[in-house]
Length: 390
Image (cartoon, rainbow, N blue to C red):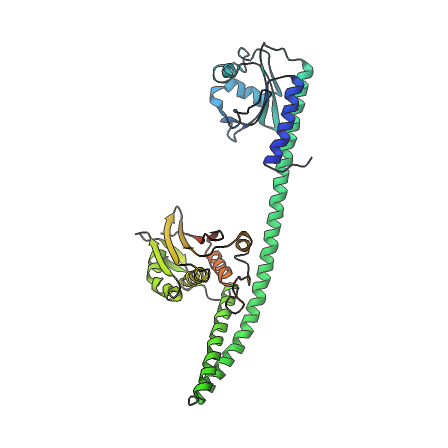
């Protein structure tokens, strides 16, 4: 049986300890795991024949039962016919055994790679019981089965983590290849675009007396300017643009650039600031941070926001920049593709699909982290953490 972590693992453990309780005719069978520092035991699974599982999650402080803890680490099975009097279990009498009516215990250690990681406890309620050698061997076998389940779960987690790592590496390689291709195309296109704009400007000067032709040429120049902007985005995304980090007070930068950001969005929505009254320094490229703010503001505007809020605060070793809006938000499918290059929910004529990938690229260049929270109809919040330098 191949088990994953979590619910499926504990279903398997539950079936094993239920079978053990019924075979050995005991009231309770629990699985307890040691903390990494051997300071405590925690109950992770419990079967009670009378129903209930109140002990799950209980933690026992190892300092209160040193003899029992030592025995668990050194012995395969602890056989306590009279648990309240047995030298290795009597430490538990007042705090655990008597309150639960437990008279006899048969505990088998859980091993993983030769190390004890926990114990399977068989707890008998009623007249004291003398455990037979056959019952002791059975209890040890149950512990082995539970240990195998934990090992399978751990292997499943390792395999899943490896698969995720490989998928991330493949995605990174794909994006790097796309960036290299985009940079080459953008360079060539930029040369063509520059020549076209120069020719259009020259034609406009020669046709200054013809308002109709001048109007058409102005439209061509405007489209050319949009093309130039797209080229710059592609070049920045491909990390071909200049990167000149300096010490910046992010609070002061956001405050001083608020009017510039507002000029991009004021026709549709209101810009609000929530800034701490302190200096929060980061090592950053001023132009790229400006581009990041503009892109996030434009993204919020195009999402139908009425208010865009930019906040800056210090959190431990980071300076956190938050850009939130009350726009239409994203569903799960769109959210999953938010940073995908050339993916856009806007009309083909108004969106390049590079705004958010560019933001992600800028954050990565600054050794930062970015996350996004959004839900359909509930707005969107981008959270960027940059290393704090002062």
